[in-house]
Length: 265
Image: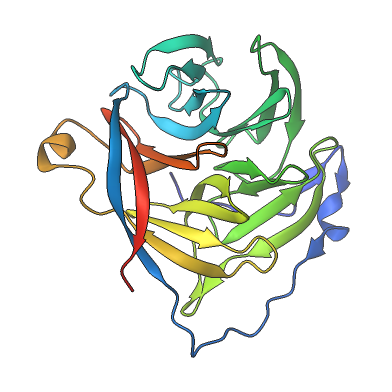
């Protein structure tokens, strides 16, 4: 990623950021330590080492994945156990694909600097429509009522899932101040999980206040050999709501991990 540009959000020719609610920061409880979690590997699955993973979702027993890079961006449906690509749609080469989320029967996919989001029919991958935003697009997730979108800063924009209009913003922070570099997002049991680029940490964020309520430290998932094979940063969080399973991977990682969290602090 490059340095993100934070601009007023424009939708359909009007400045909707003026109407969006900015959720006010509340006083941090500085006396309360933010818990830190490590992990235990439950299962390891094959992952395409050429996939520059930008977004990951588990839905209906399969993974949906967005891969980036100009000329190589795609939307994929992937078999969990084997890593086999079951279905794929190649984006035009002018687009650098970013995060995805599956909402009802639609798939939302962001692009990095083009400021265009794609909406697909989930089953066929047919492109239904596009929508615009005036920041960079990094990660996207939903809570069944709202879309959450990151742009590489500490800001999460909240969008209406039907009009795509910005209705609010979260400023994400912990006890030390703003948390920048928010990337791939996933909604997990009432919290937003966010990869923090370019670290090996995931922030657990309260979607109502923007406060970080926990940190997940994933150091050690990649071996030295993995890094020598061009493996890039951690980026890809998927959650199986029915099975309560958490999956993580990264850009050009040859493996996808099912992990269980354990508190260490």
